[in-house]
Image (tube, rainbow, N blue to C red):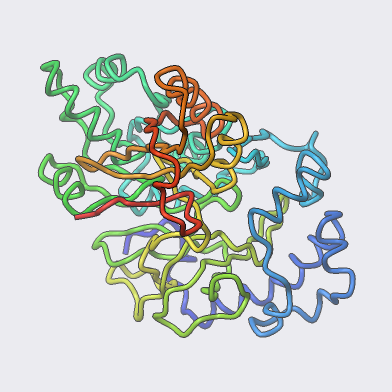
Length: 410
């Protein structure tokens, strides 16, 4: 089998043995190297954390915990195990929340997902993920360089310029969101430009509906998904044939009942909780807020690691829109900036498989001026463009929901 390395075909028992052998050292590194874990684990003996049962003794930490720690002790809340001056990059995602990048080869471990997608040395990769503020672009960049691919860092936007580059550079591979790939291909068709060089695509940061995957396949583009986060890096990825997503080799995965650290039964939907072996940012029992379930058996591709169904929604009240998380607290920040607004919710839909975000705001006055002001605030707070709809006071449901994912995937 054609795999990125020999780790992918290890016997599951050997993989588990290797992970548990490495776990006490990572717990000790986190406890001794970071002030956050030093305090959290003050009564923990790292050498005793050498099994999944022992690991469950440790508390689950989640993004709100990280945000609170960072707000009290910026920039990293003491979660970092090396000095800021030893980092390669510092990123800032909406929240705000800071994430560090190291200088190690393939720091985000994303090469494994790209290799499974068919990326090889000699490919020219069109990377359309952002290189600014958030680490998505660099996550793909470092993975491509580890494989030996040349990268065209297109980033987001400038669609016509990127179509021109596609025709001239003839990239063989695409990395980015599936919606932007469709936009580029349709724009090339509209402009009468050649975009036929693409042969494979690694997409992520938003859902890939079956109909859109087939649309790409009909154009000769083999399309697979990678799943990762800005703080963890790669978590899981699809291979050929597509049979769920395969867990990355550099993680310990637990599927836990939302709001707890207790594992669910195999096949039951729960929250993805991961333990990383990142020496810079040693997240241990980190609850991602994403939901999934474990699939039985192994992939036909020969990779032997655990398979998951992929992203199955959020365990908390938030939504990923065009690759960016929109959290409930952001809606509160928007309302706080406009005294005319009594209540609001963000509703996310996907007409024609393209994410659309609308802020529905209860207000008795303001008119067009308020709409424009809210649009600007939405973009400032969420880093995303969105529509605004003023509704009558009392018309929004009294259900506590402020981020509604109303997308339909067909």
